[in-house]
Image (cartoon, rainbow, N blue to C red; front, side):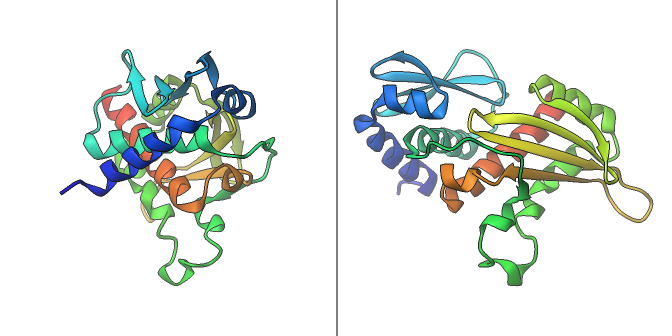
Length: 209
């Protein structure tokens, strides 16, 4: 039986058959290669988005398994298919803020998805710093008790990371914040998948450094 993440990717790839690549490149910041192909960078690797397929090109992030690979290619395809034409501002929020309270009774379940970052870096800020720099993130200094980093995860999807160093009582906590217009680029479910792909990729980058 076809796995769910494979089924989702095949559906997204099918939608790409009818994409106006020139329009998508203009609105979404893709690099237009031809009327039938564009490129996009994600976590240090270039991906080709073409009619019927999203595929990685060349070397890049370490292999993180089939599910991560298909999910990443799906969310990059969704990005190219987005009808959005927004200009991101400077209003950064936790992923759960986009769920409209649907998951409020379960607590901050989406923020718990960032736990791989805590496991990967613990109290080793130097390791986190090296991984962030490796992926092109910028050090934005300290404020509010946290150390802030930022990058354009995708051309129209900037993110901030806030590293709160742990102590004897509380473990290290690394928050991932999306600019508020991300929900205009993605519906909530693919945005949550993008969050998971990013968190896992950043955690793996540290272990591979």
